[in-house]
Length: 166
Ligand code: GUN
Image (cartoon, rainbow, N blue to C red; front, top):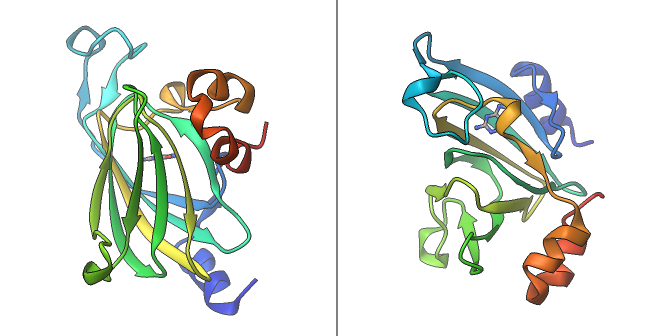
């Protein structure tokens, strides 16, 4: 692993994420939204909001998964990230998160709640941020199984096989 990537992991005390990549939660609001004020897709109370650092390195990827909140991605440093989004209406979207705005890259992008998404750095590594509200909870996190996702998005079989681990 490149030395600067190791330094980032040590400095920010990043941990391996089940979807791939490394992360560190940097914010979790102290206040909570009661369960009866949330839609039924949430199985209990949730923090108002959470934020993480997320690091993707070459030779790895974040596998297709979905969560129950909109997720706002922020580009910080390193190479651009490709975020592959399979929307609930069946559409595919490629978001390029990065600093080269002339190449169509965005500093900030939204992945809507319920969409399946996978991501990969375009170079050595990418350091980004992900903010969600209602706050992140692993109860709202689901890793995709390739076979089930292909039934739902048959035109994206190649992409799904590439970005699933099971
Ligand atoms: N906290 C732990 N995992 C995640 C994640 O995938 N996204 C966000 N926003 N927060 C997290």
